[in-house]
Length: 190
Image (cartoon, rainbow, N blue to C red; front, side, top):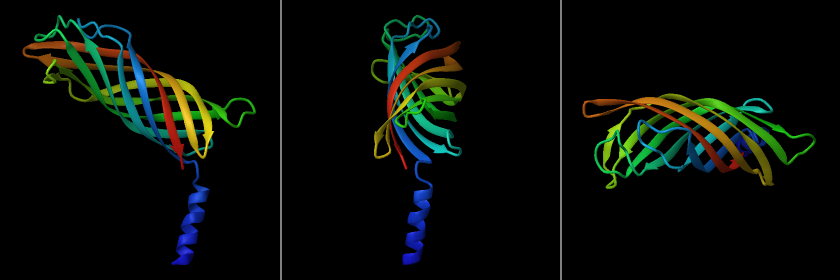
């Protein structure tokens, strides 16, 4: 049993820094209206797990929640104050490489897909419509700052695009949700 424990500890040392867990709150800036709804700046967060399969290249997968508010929703019947909640999954590849000879500062580039849906909610939190999940895409860039003890700070700017149809009663709305997202993540590598 002692031999097995020593072997596992040794293997964990060999796999060090291959895995990471990141939590990233963010602000979201829509690039256009959603239907006729004038979207305000949104906010949300993402939780992601990463696995580095090469020295600088890895894969990530996660779950996120973002919400946008609109005071006037001309296309959507009901209350004037409407929330558009976007939830779902992210996945893709990320490249993290040191800047010059720095050991503590790296640049980060990521590209991948999203599998999200859009819920339309009224003031009371009732869901008026749900687009159902569908595929979109995302790209992002930022920096990674080594904080020590395998903790990383990751400010980054990204762009996401999702096209879904939202049905409210007999009306179908083409909902193209495109937005820039700025977030500062904190990651732990192990």
